[in-house]
Image 1: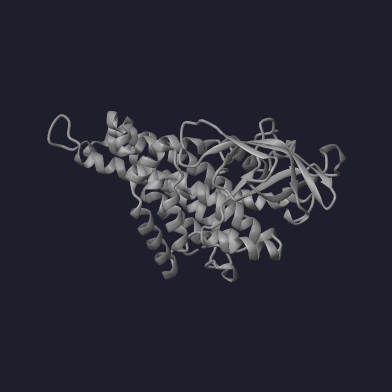
Image 2 (image 1 turned 90 degrees about the vertical axis):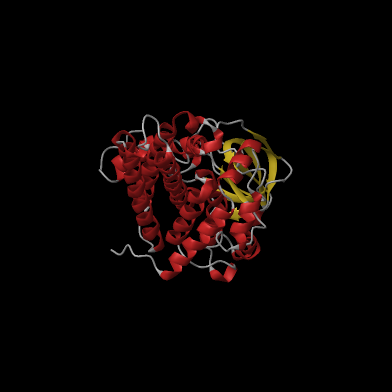
Length: 390
C-alpha cells in the first residue's frame, strides 16, 4: 500500500489548483446569484487538459485513471467551486467520457470524445423519474421499435445540466418489465441530441447548486436512430452500474473538497476573530474540536474515495468502496459546512463570506446521486451478507 503521489500526479494537482484559484470564491458567489453556468472556468479546465484526464490518448485525453481524475477534481473544487463544480465532471468525463470509452461504438468515440476533451461537447444523463426515484428498474420511459430505430416517450426529473448539453444519455426501457427473464434486463442506453424534436425540458427552482440547472425532461415520440444505441440492447442496466459508481467517485471528490474549503474559511476567520478579550476564538476548544472532527471525517472520506478510484483503475471490484466513500463524504461536507457557519456566527449566514453557498450546495449530496439510506442498504447486503431489505 503506497500513499505517495507520483510526480505526474503532483503536477496534475498543481495545475488543477492554479486553474481553480484563477476563478476564486467571488466568481462562484456571483454566478450563484445569477444562476449562471460557469462557462469560463469550464473552458479553462478543458484547455488545461483536465476534462480529458481519464480519456484515452488516442482521442485527445491524457490516458490516466480515475485516481488522477479524483485528485484533480479535489484540487479544483477546493479552490472555490465546491461540490457544484464536481457535478460538471459527472456530466462530462463520466456520463460522456466513461460511457463512450467503455461502451461506445468506434464511430461514437471518434466523433464525440475529442469534442468532449476540448470542451466543444457537453453531456447530461436522463435517468431519474418522478415515480421511480432510486428504483431504476421501475422506470417507465419507453423506446418502442420504429424501423431501424426507436420512438421515445416518457418523463425524467432532476436531470443535471440539460440546457448546456449537446448530448443526453437516456436510460429507457426497450422491453417491458413483464416480458423479461431477469428484472435487470430490458433497459437500454441511448445517446441523443438534446435539441431533437420531441424533447423538451423545464428548469426546477431549487435551493442550491444554482450554477448548474436541474430540469424536468419530457420525451414525446422523439426519434432515436439505430446508431445511437450505446452498448447492448436490453443490457443497459449492467453498463449503467459502471457509470453510476464512477459518478460516486467524482461526487465524493467534490464533497471532500467542499469540506476542506469550508474548514479553511472557518479557520481563517477563527484565527482573526476576537470577542471578549485579545484571544482569537480559534484558541477555544469549543471552536477547535468541531472543526477538527470535521477535518478527520473529510480525510477518511478522501482515503476511501482514493481506494475506490485505485481499485477501478486496477480493474477490481470497487462498488462498495465507491458507495462508502460517497456516504462518508456527504456527511463530512455537511458537518464541515455546518460547523464553519457556526464558527462564523452571523457572518456565516451572509453571502459575503461564501460558506452558506457551500452549505446549500453540499446538502444535495446526502440524497443524490444516491441516497445515503441506499448506500447503507447496499453495504448491509453486499458487505455484511444481510438479507435484502427493500
